[in-house]
Image (cartoon, rainbow, N blue to C red):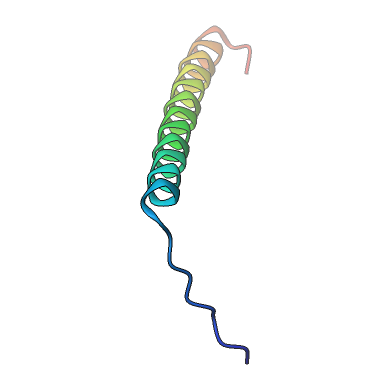
Amino acid sequence: MARKKIVSLDDTQRQKNEEILRRLEEERRALIEDTRSIQEEWNTRKRRRRRRGEF
C-alpha cells in the first residue's frame, strides 16, 4: 500500500481551505434545513389528504 504524502500548507492556503470548508458546512446545513422543511410540508399535506379521503 502506498504511503500518504505529508503536505505542508502555508497560511494563505490554510485560510483558503478553512473558508472552503466553512462554506461547504453552511451549504450542508442549508440543504438539511431545506430537506426537513420539504419533508414536514409533505407530511402535513399527507395528513390533510388522509382526512379528506384523497389518499
